[in-house]
Image 1: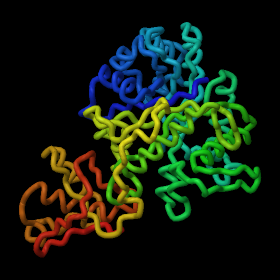
Image 2: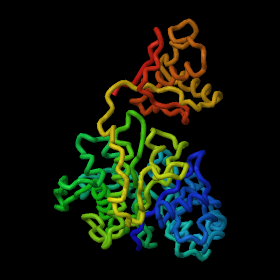
Image 3: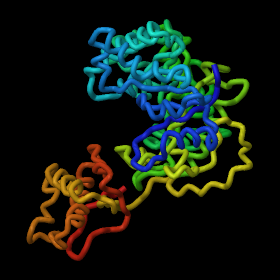
Image 4: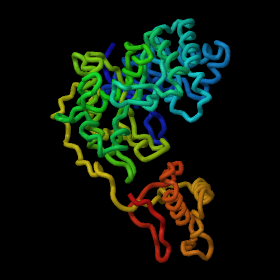
Length: 444
């Protein structure tokens, strides 16, 4: 099993290079030897033909129920259409069924996940594509407990019903447990108790010793993976290999997001590549010497990814093909050759007020419906912009949207409301208030 590091090629951007150019960039610019895509995009699969890159493709979440509940024919048909035409020229090696299914709020799909994996595997076998391993990526929230690592336990709502049959399947087919492991999320939600260097694999003197196993950890990444190892062991599967389906660190984000910057992203990704490509393999404290195949997320900063600003800033490359920071996924580039990185400015939480306003490029029709949405949600959210009220002037759509977005966000942020509105809004630290019209803000 190769310790080479690959890259996740997400496509949620309206300004990304063509598949042909992207494949060129992966090889020449990043020296990637694996790529993971989130569908079975024919243009990308054709661009990868006769190229020495192992490929992972994905069955979309939306069809898992149908594949699971219908006869074998639907699964066969999917494999015939999306896999066979590209073999053997395109090196499809992994087929992932869905993406983070067990983190979805729609629980109706959960019991259908493993049956769909079995059907896809049977189709591959019957149709002569036996080399392809079948799996499914899980986020870290499949664990109910992850600390200390020896206490790693799967969530009680999926442990017996989904995880046990899944592990049985992975074990029988010699496949992998695919996991999305980001140290950024636990660190950014608890920066007081988790040291930044420990999350960046940068620490030289911070260690944690598991009280049960007496294993000593020098970074958060190993801790997270070993929690998964112990959770699998608890269900009787101590030897299933782990594949890092995604890891990475954001190179930018919103004002209310700590630690998302180029310095940290470069530090984390360079350190993880060094660890994962080391020869002999390092593994983790619970599995010393085990190879960890992996994908770094992501190829590009993707401007149409929903959610907080960090979601659009995980790229190794900008959409114009230039590096966000220098990195070599082969692990061969000497670090002393890299240019100095910009110093981080947001490793401490931002203190002050933040407003949410319309982004410059906003489309008028979409802005108008986002304004209506913000005003319909709450508690007198838009009262001050009604005729005759203190914020009714100037009578422009952008002004009203600025007020509505700020008002909505200040009311609903604690309940999970974001300053995004399908890309129509952005955070600002410049007070948009005017005259007697005072805009509500979020204070951090």
